[in-house]
Amino acid sequence: MFDIKLLVKKLVGKKNIQRFRTMFIYPMKLKQNYLMDYHLYKKHSTIFTRNTFSKLECEITLRYHSIEKGFVHSPIRSGFGKQRVIELIELLKNGTIMEHFGSVQVQAAINILCKYFEMHQTNGFDISDYYPEADYQFFKTMLISDFGTKKEHSKESFFLFSNADFKSFSTSRCSVRSFSGEKISKEIIREVITLANNAPSVCNRQPAFVYLIENKILIDTILSIQGGLKSHTETLNQLIVLTCNRNYFYSIGERNQLYIDGGIYLMNLLYALHYYQIAACPCHWGMPVKADKQIRTLLSLKESEQVISLIAIGIPTETFATTLSPRRNYNENLNVID
Ligand SMILES: Cc1cc2nc3c(=O)[nH]c(=O)nc-3n(C[C@H](O)[C@H](O)[C@H](O)COP(=O)(O)O)c2cc1C
Image (cartoon, rainbow, N blue to C red; front, side, top):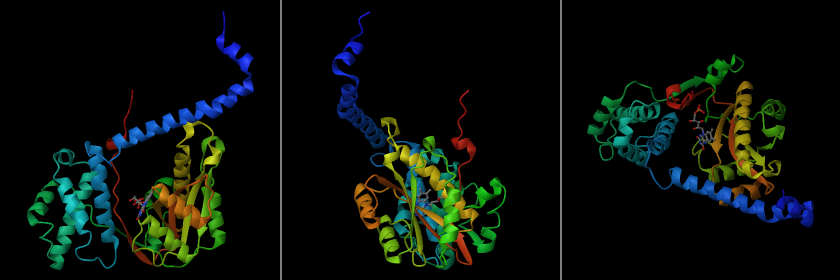
């Protein structure tokens, strides 16, 4: 049978075909794939529409988590997070949300709003202009269980399970935002990174790189671009910047693999820090390209490197509080396909 592919290969030559693919076919396919990523993100993220429960759940979580962080502050500022509270009240009155009022995230939001009202009532601080009592009474009827406002720790109790079995160890880790200012030695940091390097990666390509920043001006500049650790930075003297290098990825299908390998590395790094009794808070770098360029310039990163996350680290204060950040029950995210 006549094979057209074989004939073309013979006439044009294998090398030229490969060159043609590299110059024209692959860039076109890469563009198509990124375009599909763009369409899916545009349609299904929460930027443009709030037409599903998941999107609304995302919106309420953003707001209740921000209010939750306000409770961790010492001293707590009366009237904190006013705009967030107004928006959260509005969102929680949405019928779709209330159909799922028993879910963990909705309950966590209702709980924090109840606690917010009760705290202001106890302090005699009037918030009726943005949070009417009638709303509080409504939320109170929807609250299934009391979560409290925050988790309180002493430095000693927080690290009690840092060398324990995995279940206790993993359960005891959480994000700490209260740093004493004391620095971790380079020697310990080397041990931490050696342990974090156990993270698996695609074909063991190990695309993750770690930068330890100890220059306070640089730390403050980076965090001001990032903006997610407000008012916790005064005594923060060490910051990790985790990157993944695109050079380690070779196919169109792997175009987002750096975020997977970076995420796996991040988790193992957080565990390694906890193991060595170092307080840590990951700080998102889901930033637009302008911020990417700024941090690349500040740290002289290669253009091929993508910042995955920042991690604030240090010795915690003697006592401190962390957010509740309750987790879903498994029946909210486990799907069995027979
Ligand atoms: C990728 C990532 C980015 C995060 N960014 C921030 C941040 O910018 N600011 C902050 O205070 N916490 C940040 N956090 C911490 C989360 O708020 C925290 O992990 C979540 O509430 C769960 O609580 P836990 O870590 O205490 O268990 C981030 C966490 C992750 C994993």
